Amino acid sequence: MEIATKEQLRGAFLRWAVVTVPLILLLGFASSRIAPAGAENRWYAALARPSLTPPDWVFPVAWGSLYILMGVALAMIINARGSRLRGVAIVLFVVQLLLNLAWSPLFFGMHQVSAALILLIGLLVAALATTLVFGRIRAAAAWLMVPYLAWLCFAGLLNWQIGKLNPNASTLVPSSSSAQMSF
Image (cartoon, rainbow, N blue to C red; front, side):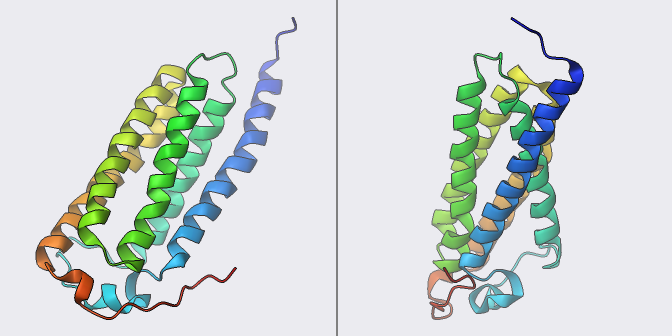
């Protein structure tokens, strides 16, 4: 059995990162385009929003940055071939990513504020479990997930406050059935 050099290991990690980072960015972008978000969404624009709501431009910057960090963390875990927890970590990551991708269509597209909050709580639990398992494999991968966990907590607070400020949010404005992305 031959042991890989540091350069070979770094090269393998970079090859994975070149796949995982753009893939996660693409999936996140696609999810956000299923239903328009921010000012582009008539329903969201009509909602009463809490004072701590950031300007619309913050959301794509934050999510883009978080998706990059998540992609790098995933590449680190995929590249950790000797870990017995690697498979579990990847499955947890996929589960939390699927929950993540479902939130935007549920909130912005279906106008289901309460259901989106429940989904977000499940997402936070799954992301925390992912981070903890990542930490058992590669500490750096877990640290790359920490800003995501913090943002999910902030998103949960915003989601909850929007629900409180808009108890009848689902009937606020008739739903626009047009998606921003065509297949």
